[in-house]
Length: 165
Image (cartoon, rainbow, N blue to C red):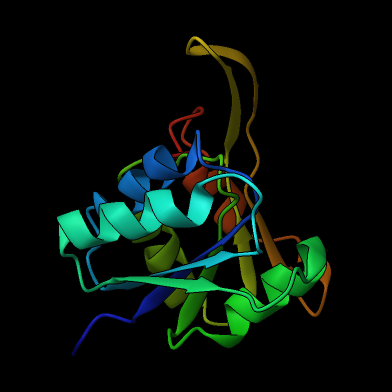
């Protein structure tokens, strides 16, 4: 049985300084069956060109870059990004965020083990520049029909803050 395709969406606007780290944190995942959709919302900086150059050099066919014809705004760009997805699961990722190398594998494992879940929300750590963790939020919540679900899963996956970011 083939593992599910995960669509990672990165809606971007004026993120030239951070987006390559974000992209690399996706492409280096231990879970490899993914597509990475980057949609630039007509940035006024070099975001689109930075990603275009990286994509050409990387030669990774999982990376798909698009640029909107006009600026759609944050919500519009997120929606457009998700419309381009082909995956069984969608991961929305801001263009200045990083994800732990095992995050997608762990999230897919949870979604497959609990098919009644519609969403998995995982651990977040806020990092300053230069890199230093300034605060951490440890939470894992399953969502169904727009509401958090109390689940026996929670004690099972909160291993004392070991859940990936």
